[in-house]
Image (cartoon, rainbow, N blue to C red):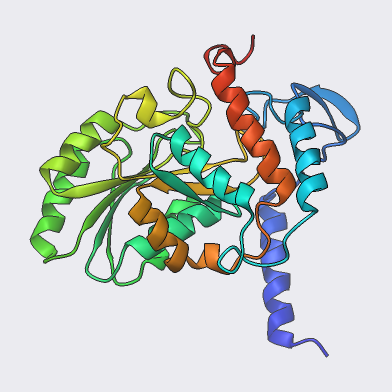
Length: 305
């Protein structure tokens, strides 16, 4: 017999979700994701996807994925903490270079990347200062960093950010402080004030972690993101990104120094305990996507052209 308390909980929650109409209709894609696609059996103009550079159906990427399967098979069947493909390590390095960092560490998704980037970096006695409109993955990653002070500042309000930092200095002893923000905010499309943020961070002995998910392939002359857009190379310690938006595959990564890579590879649980992520097909297609973005900057400069 099912547990009565469990059944009652589900019944109440489902009734509430139906009452408010939460995700009452999820669109069903009946073919490739493109400018025009088949949704719910009808051809429509798609304005609800993050396929910013139109790479989701790119023939070169599809071919690269097929060739990777021919060489490596479907999957490895183990975690990267035990064994890794050479092409996975190549992708780590290429993503780091793309972001102007030493290297990057890949994760199964962007959500996992924030979980596995924030949580290990922030320990008891540290302070996190976060924009109030940051993505759910940032919020959850900060929540997992137990024992830290967590302060929220008003959206894009640099005066409030500095004020909150000053308050935190009085309370912290030897702990470090991280300022964390989305670079391009997914709901409104506004951009973080990175130059001001860097100035404030240097002034108050903090370091910066930015989520470049919606900026990659969009900001910067060659689509490398927010750091390129503001020419802030060497001034941002941690850059997180996803592969599922402009790059059009799947996965996430955290880019930074070689020391950061070494540390997260041994301390990030979402990395260590995820088996078989970034399959050969995904690696092959992603490596080709990075090549295309750098070879064809016009995709970034005029994505609708």
